[in-house]
Length: 237
Image 1: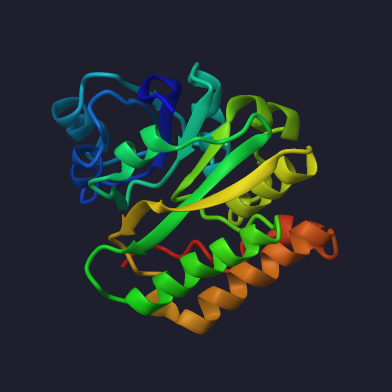
Image 2: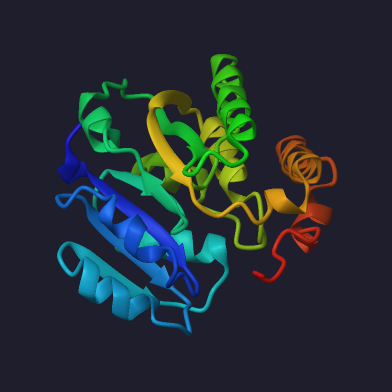
């Protein structure tokens, strides 16, 4: 795979404390589209830290709207969706270049681990679970580290704007239903720097994610999921 065929798409909202570490972990040859809803200095930090190959769009929309707007602004065959509180593994983009997938692979899921060792076991088990389900062709990835083929995203109908949470696993499921394969590669690693949702309770976070994703996949109670995030987006402390 070529770096020229990949665009990183990231939604941001008041990420001044995270954005510089995120930007410095990117390969300089990779294109970046930021869809920003910030009122802090996030955009100024982006302009100073990574002016090259970077396009910033100001947009007050929600997360799935931002991801879709970023995808629409990109023109590469592959789109890497992530979040600003991540940093990429030093070997991430080398692993991407070594990657060889078939014509029917529509999305590639990667691992999400802890940047500082906090909740390390949770993240390892979470990533292992994604890999295990992928063996049975069941997508269950994370919006912090999912690479989607542009054509597969188009055929799947893009992101569901009504979802303020779980839009990531849902869009991967739509890609799968559109006839594409979704695979997992553990050497594509990102590291989480912000654990605030886990601090609200590991069991709560796990049940929240898996219950809602299952409802969306099966269609049972999907409209209820679309009406509310069930307390997922609480203000940062």
